Length: 436
Ligand code: UDX
Image 1 (cartoon, helix red, strand yellow):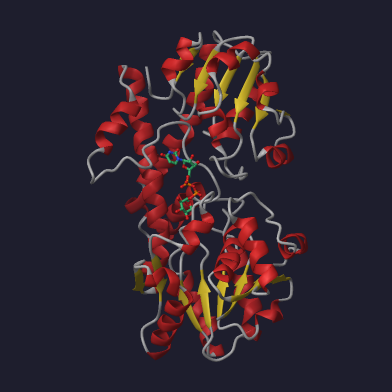
Image 2: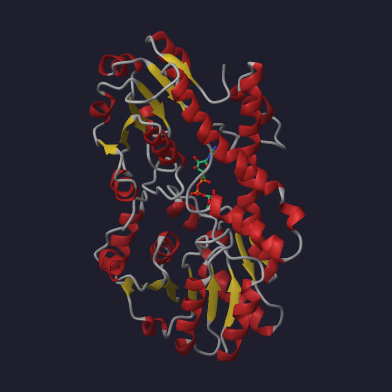
């Protein structure tokens, strides 16, 4: 089927390439010429495992191309809108400028019977407003949220846990349902649930899922705070409660908390939207989820100070990690970098290393010292803090080898990902998050 994808950022670029890889004829459209030039050469403008392969494959097969020209959307049957909805500069709400611009830009090229499929994460109520502009063209608006995780984006797009589509009732809606089923037929044929809802439900499914995940992380981080004053071990606690299938162990990793381009901004936008709807009390707990999350970054900084005897001033601190999570070069709202910047603010000489995110980090926080080689970064450190659980630090860094490089032997495990006994055995003073 001929598809267009408006917005070739994280979501759109992956979606375009993934749709081509399952056999569709796809044009990706974005206003950013540099991004389009890079994608047209089969080069991913960001780090995402598996993406370069499906990009090159799509381009060489002729099923995938990229352009800055919106008129090339004409002729596609389904137009996916995957532009960003960042947090507004002066508050918590989602900025819908790009979504509105994408839909308005698309209107002149829509034909009768086309589908406009919104994928961006938007405040509930947005789709209904956009439908008023799309419907007069004869096209049908559907809301088809995306649940991909960075680092697993290709797999999550081709083989998702579930597909959700907010589709209006009636004949046009029924036709849209059949077309979307055809688009996603490889996943649906494999048994992936395809859930058809109204607009508001589809929009809410996305924010509710992210709010739940964020709450789960902050719940265990709240338990870490209690563990810290009682001598309990939050990782054992998580293991034990996680055995209850109703709770489950995933997303119970205590540490410096969540970051990235989605969870933090989505829970804030949800709070802002609930307030507009006169229901702020329904999600007031999300303010607490955010507050707990931010406190854990401060706690990690406090542990470095404690480990260095009360001050980090003019001490060498090596920060292992910059990305908001492993398998990503994304530093948006990265707890890892927040910790590094706070330590710098306290007068420490901070050296940051990361396998993928250094260039992005350096652009935003040029005041820190960046060293690509892990061992070079460790050399002469008075304290080491792990803030992104890359395998390079979690599995592949031998504590004895690390000890031979550093000056002091204090390690703060901001992700509870190290083998505490092995590090202690190699002479390190080990601090975990919510662990004795
Ligand atoms: C998230 C959602 O998982 C995804 O479904 C949605 O589409 C977009 O937002 P992503 O931002 O890629 O995906 O990252 P995710 O894997 O959810 O991790 C988010 C943050 O939570 C990371 O900073 C991670 O380090 C942190 N995290 C995750 C924890 O602190 N503890 C955990 O147990 C799990």
